[in-house]
Length: 376
Ligand SMILES: [Zn+2]
Image 1 (cartoon, rainbow, N blue to C red):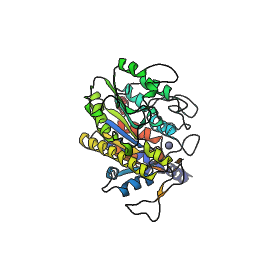
Image 2: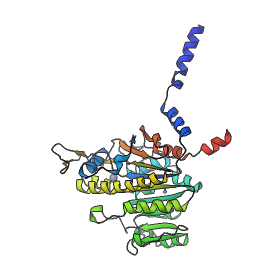
Image 3: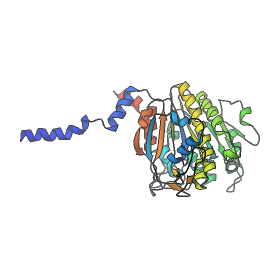
Image 4: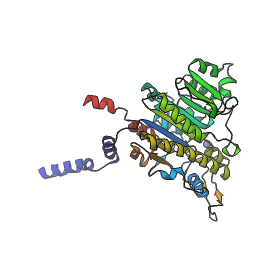
């Protein structure tokens, strides 16, 4: 009887001797100091096929090929195996699965706080940069709380009430040429401590940033153009934004950079459009990595909210001539890759939910460790 009891205890304790992912994470957190800054780059609609096409059609290695810590994440939404950018961004920003089209709400419609709001309380600087409109789902997931992603004018109003230190993207009309009211949110923001510029009045390169004020730059009244039609700002703005945010707060920063139109090219089943957007996004990744290598306290994460188009390179293709196969004109449920570099990047190995990106970012920043250390 006694022997049996010991045997039972042994069986019960067996799992604690193994190196579970949780145990490995704890070891990592003890071994490696937290990251001061995070640059999160989201290639909207960027699956393995899109990365492959960018890689094969480029004459030299992609910047993404520099990463050696790689994971995979499950993109599905609360209400649908096929997600959208709103539920995807909400998962990254809040750690909650939500329904398609919802921003900053959980699946029951309750407002949930996001990593930007939590970082602002800790006096971090915050940045958003996109090749879509700034009120579009992916950037909006980091500041807005609305049931419908199409509530662009409400989302614009919510942006003016948040303290995003640096933002750049299209969608100026939702701020100063509104259908629902005659307000001019741009003049409101100027009164609230922002310098606001737009591409029609001011070239980005001519601006000397004033770090004592917030920085907003509108790249278009509606959606910004395609890269192949002359849109070039994503890589230089990644550099400008990173420097701005570093000067803006000594505590650290979180900067979300989105290559939005990889997704739009997928919806259009347009391979040439997709590859040019993919390469433009990869240049922004290169800027982020260059900063992180110098700075040494910055975690760079590259991922996608979902794959778009069910894209694959077809038989008969060569490096110079890729034959596209598309299985959808919408998003798919394929796993998407996660690449990480910098302090605590190892947290991002493995296969996990999209909501784990939030948890891992919080762990990488060491939030909660200060209070845990005080209690010891
Ligand atoms: Zn899409």
